[in-house]
Length: 115
Length: 114
Image 1 (cartoon, rainbow over the protein chains, first blue to last red):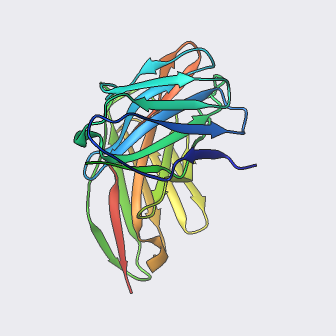
Image 2 (image 1 turned 180 degrees about the horizontal axis):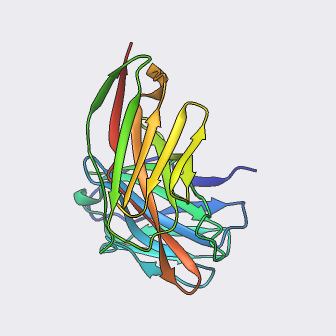
């Protein structure tokens, strides 16, 4: 039971390049999330998927797209990377079946640098 | 907009002392509350959850909730250098269609001095 996994762990891009961050969970969770974390800014929600087949914008969606490929996988795409997207990206998942007590679990993170 | 406020710190306490971390939230109807610990360069991990007014103890950790004051706290007794980390307060809010969404505070950095 690996929990939430993310690939890659580290990535360096040049401005304008594109890439996709991959996330998978093996806990049969309904909801999945993408956050970015910057010094002094805390965790900020980029996009989330409350259930398979649905995606919604979070607090900072500009410059990103997401795909909920199936119940296990939720990817984040940067179409044209900008230096402002240099950050640590965390994927998270949650069972979220109507119980407010459901715990949210995080992946190990991807450190992205855009030059 | 739902807000969760924490003192950013850093909070420095000597080894063996009690560390007190505080959090306030704006959404009056929130029902569940979580504390995450995040070591430098690592992802957040859940250490405590609390749903009812009062205290909840787990080892050296005690979470306290006062819904009337919209206030959550985390006490760490007998603080150890290994407790040095950033502590994130998270508050659950209903986002519709039977699902909930966490709102995180920016975190309080704790340093335990040997």
